[in-house]
Image (cartoon, rainbow, N blue to C red):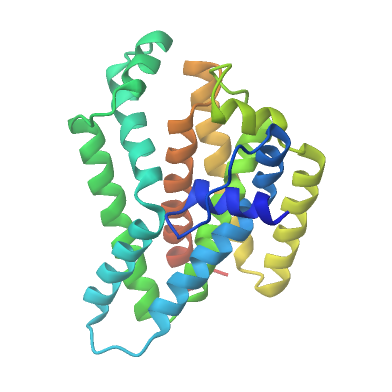
Length: 249
């Protein structure tokens, strides 16, 4: 189990992690059970950084927090979002062309614009949450995004037959994962009932992105997983501002 957790941390973050030599398919599959825990760790680190006494203005503090967020994940999911945006626009409804563009490591103008807009929205949402002292949302957001990953894996075929993504999707223990996701969801609502809106936003993003992926690609790719994490995070932050800071009951 320790190896499985370390595999999850190594895959999802840039935190120092011992190298796992030659993990088997079963270990890779079971590592997905620890994705929510890795998300909780990321959220805890962000909450700790946001809670430290500081002389920074809220605007600058939000900028520092967003920078730390990107550094903790190494921009891995941002890269997936940029590739996805480029491919979706440049693919012109062609499955083959879309997949071809996704393989290109360079980011085009559409990908750059997508990143700028997403980071701007994250920054503004973080600023609003900091000013309202709603720091628990910073803990929950990375957790929900890493719950969205296995939810997409359980419900969507992987486009390519080979590679790490295919192994993760095929080897995931689906029954155990479903039970874990339900347990975490119930625990979040017991912790704070307003988290229901954040859970709902997560499910909606997964459903909508899955719908578009299936229509264009008949499945999901690694870039699709990266885009999912970023889209869930920004939508959850915006939902939190609208429902918790904005006072919707």
